[in-house]
Length: 110
Image (cartoon, rainbow, N blue to C red; front, side, top):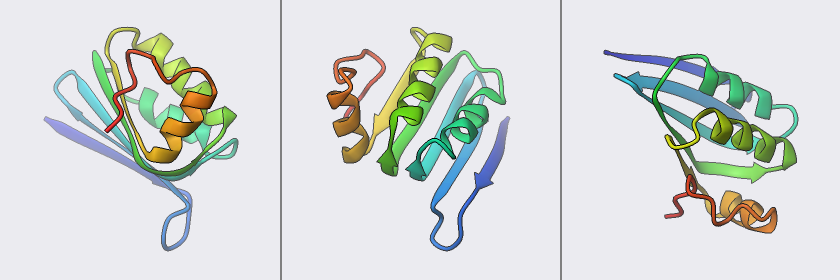
């Protein structure tokens, strides 16, 4: 059974949105737009709303990613130590590389 949750904090086009869908024990969270100190908490809460054994955090449509966003992803990595997959955009990959997180097991660049 699939369930979905969507949060949109922007106008058109969205500055930020996060949606979550569960499929069995797998949670897929899709984030678009800018993830910064005002939206990182919403991204994290969307990801933690539904219990899951595995999580995919799809950040391929993220255009801005700051230290608050990094902190949220690191918290998710701690929550899902061997069950997190992060799919980054080019911008997210660059920020994670600069932060020294470019070689993490959970990061799966395109």
